[in-house]
Length: 82
Image (cartoon, rainbow, N blue to C red):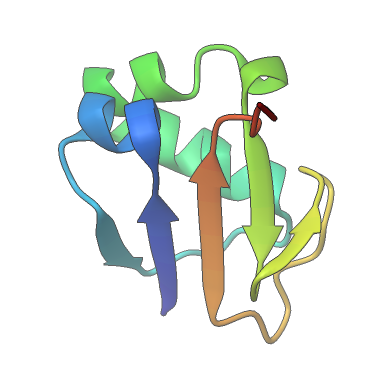
């Protein structure tokens, strides 16, 4: 089981701040594909991966990051300074 966290508009589109996911995915990208196949709201949230950032166990990474031993994956839009 992996804890999947959603922030900002990703959370709004999916309708959940976090959930536990049972997955066979070996990378973050495969996890995204599994989530997108679930329901339309996930498809909408992950439609444009270039508009998303991902962190694995609180370390910023990319979508080809491995999931072996991972406890938490977080998805969020890029942060803007100001």
